Length: 253
Ligand code: OAD
Image (cartoon, rainbow, N blue to C red; front, side):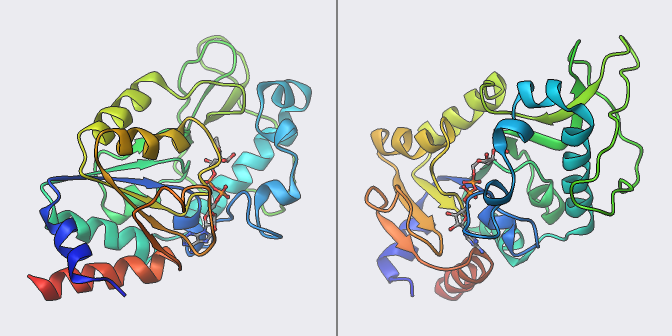
């Protein structure tokens, strides 16, 4: 599956940036957004569930939906794809994970310093004053998909707590973006895994990498707009290809 040239290129890389999307968590049972039939945006309206306007219109619907998603994530486990990325660290001086995912499966697999471009399901904040809100350390009691739940109140100002994810029309957190861009500019390889490469600004990171001379490697079972720009396209599931890659690298050294 992997040519020796490709493997040697990876081993010579001083720094690799890994850009992940919902596809890497799919094998943990977490739904993606745009996959036919199973994607969340195939079944739900992002204008209602992923915008400040939608939240203002129906807070308990939106809060319940994100609590349902958080419950799914808390019950899920990192899969062989997440785990293989931690193993990959052994073969390069520096590996930075930049994710669009709002779950914590990279961290639970053992990745350190993960950059979250789209925030986190686990770090909600006040809709009015932006103060962070701490969750009780339990799985939310949401059994039914689509169940409404009144959001908690902010301890500081009494405002409504909102999910800590970036919604459409909102900016990616400046610090996370800066860290991601710095990592990409400094990398010899950008590995794009499980993302449809359709959402900006994350989808711009491979272009920035190319301008700075990096090789682009993509792992995805389906075609994406990145296919024509990537130097290497591996068609398949992250949870199968990444462990095979780690094994091939171990066999070579
Ligand atoms: P998408 O749902 O747009 O794309 C998921 C990608 O994962 C698709 O290209 C699939 O082909 C691929 N895929 C599916 N199963 C896979 C597997 N087992 N291994 C590897 N790849 C697999 O998800 P994202 O690109 O992450 O924003 O979407 C970007 C953003 O759009 C999300 O972060 C979300 C959404 O609106 C926020 O939540 C803020």
